[in-house]
Picture 1 (cartoon, helix red, strand yellow):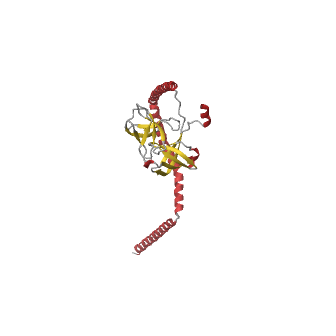
Picture 2 (picture 1 turned 90 degrees about the horizontal axis):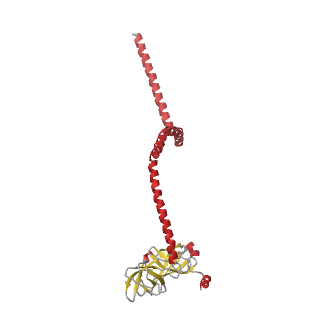
Picture 3 (picture 1 turned 90 degrees about the vertical axis):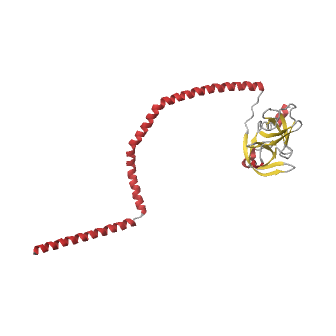
Amino acid sequence: MQRQRVLFLKENYVLRVLKNFFLAGLFIIALLLILVHKIDISIVSGVTQGIMYISSPLIHIVSLPAEGLSYSYKKLSEIMHVYEENEHLRQENSELYLLKDHMRALQAENRILKKLLHHIDVPQTRSYTARVIAENNNAFSNSLLLYLGSASDFIKTGYAVVTPSGLIGRIDIVSGKYARVTLITDINSKIPVVSQKSRDRGILVGNNTRKMNLIFPPLMAELHKGDILVTSGTGGGLPPDIPVAKIKRAGVDTITAIPLFSPSELEIVKIIAYDIVPDKTTSKELE
């Protein structure tokens, strides 16, 4: 009986030791969790970056076989279709050669026609943009005031002023960075025009209203309501074939037209620099 009681006591002692060890382990784990919670985030970020720095090359090495297979498949596919692409390119080259020969034939024909018609090529024009800052539309004048900005050094009197609809007027005065435009509806405006359809010529004269008169048309002119009048280029002051107005009434004695532009468009305009008129010295020599 005595020995059994001793064994029972030894077993209770072992349980107590295990219990204390378990409590100590829990305390150590709790302490570690508190320390981890207090660690600076930058340290955690640094550890993460270090892990990525080490693992990235490994991931790249692992992905190399897949990239090699993808590249090989792409090249093999290109090699398999190279014959079809070559045939397609040969066909395109044949078509281009035909177009080239056709273009050369048209150029030769164009040169011959120019010689027969005594045609003179129109010099290359330049264009500048300007902003409308004021309007003057009354019974005495129809004009605009433009701000030219940095383009003021290149603008001269007589240059055409256009909008997407067509011609609206000509530069009248240039002063510093500003310019005044005489609209085609002004009473002082006289624009040489030609019918876009019949090529009959005339002079379009403004009268400070939306209605303009076409004067000096040919006696047998074929002018009808709705025909578009464009600049003829006569006199060399304006580039040819700029839309100007549309015929509203074509009577026996009177032909009236209305401008193509709308006053709401007069915000930003384009100025066309067209220098074809000879200077004074050349004019005297030609006389």
